[in-house]
Image (cartoon, rainbow, N blue to C red; front, side, top):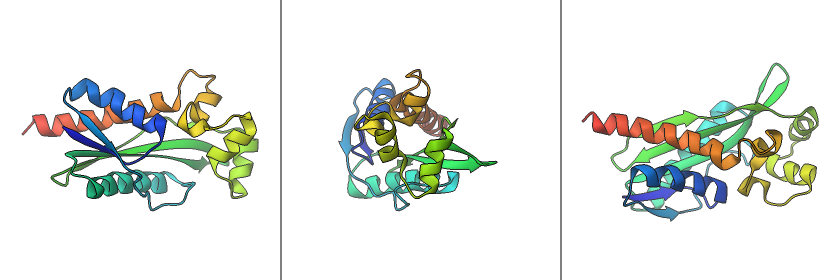
Length: 173
């Protein structure tokens, strides 16, 4: 099974590979820098979801894959609190599409303030933690859960939801 992953982000790639290898023993992976066609910092559930769908669709277009995954992280606001939000999409070569969302945790007020001022979470987190490549590793979710949930683990949950939907739909046929 040829599987495309619409990113070159390490945490996202490892999430897809870890879960997909469990269900598709013959899986081969192709990584492409697929456009999200949304802002670098998605600011709503809808925009984050759209970014994941676009990444999956664009990865499918760029490859000869049977399945393609798009994963997108963003933020959303509820009652003046800002949360991290995450979406995934799985596109099948026959045109079918599945979507799923993942963990949402509140961001500290000082981080939210920086994003409201036009910043992007990844660079803000690097400045906040004095560490590089936060989004390639633990992510904000890893930092703010003391490492109990990493960005990869969070995306693994979404990938599991996507593959589960795919298996349900295609095993029923």
